[in-house]
Length: 223
Image 1: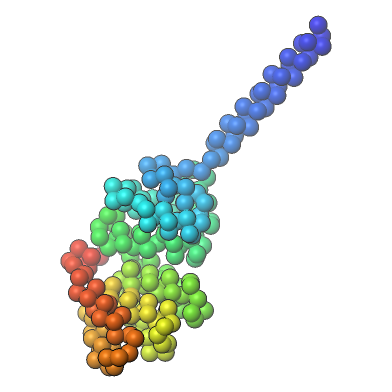
Image 2: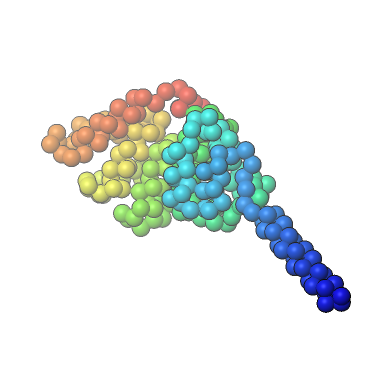
């Protein structure tokens, strides 16, 4: 009889410990409320490739909630989610994966925020990165997406110092096509005039000029 009671107590104790462990695990599980599930999963993983893939497949109906969450992550707010790996999301690699979506959202009015901190981050990262690296190319792309007009001289200098088919060279031309400041359009026109028609840059420059012409009042609204 005593052996039976002892066995029952052991089973109850084991069950209690198991349920307690499950409860603790549940409490620590990462989550981001009101966010599209693939985006939530990507934020919880803090994996750059997963983040880019999640944004690429996000439906327009989820753009607003995604932008709000990304702004909170960019600002380092701890209440954006539960057990979110904020330290890893503050790494340069992670930022270069999610900040482009945030910058686009700010420019088109999905969220209200000052772009200056993103512009500064993009320019500083591009300048600090080793020439020709993926990090540099991604940062240059963000310079354009974030409308970092203060970086126009840097882009022009980089275009002059590098050559096609350098990814940094090509991305610098494209970045000028995303910047609202008239100086960006002037630099593109100057490049087009100075570049021989048979040069491989001609097509990239023409496309950048066309993209620059498409920038409307909402994309270039006062901020």
